[in-house]
Amino acid sequence: MQNIDWSEIYVLIDNLWDGPLDVVRSGTFNAENSKLIRDVLSSIRIPKIDPLPRKFVSEIWYLPIFLERNKPKVQTVNSAEVAAEYDDLCSWVFNKVNELIGD
Image (cartoon, rainbow, N blue to C red; front, side):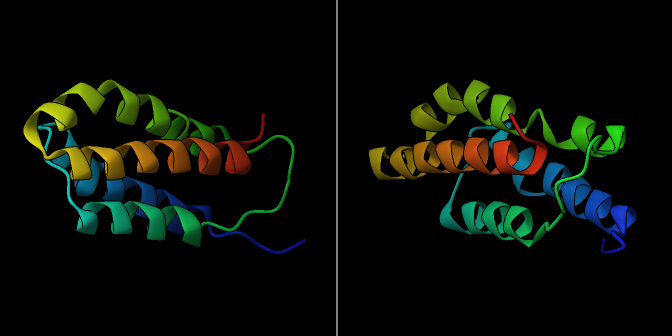
């Protein structure tokens, strides 16, 4: 089994919360934020281990919920095209988090 640097993964996730996800709180969303979120989550490679570290699960499980809760703000502040891109990101993040932490 490969040795995982969990601290590096935690930094990546924290940077999401302090960067593009912090911007989403205000309803602001753009293609750059979407790409950053997708790139960071795509870069996380972990083997299927049981149990996953509690800290990892606690830092990542809320991402899809957070994005869904901010959907009305994003739809109000942005164009229909941007809102559709945000919807796509919400679905993608839900699936990615499911893949990372399991069902």
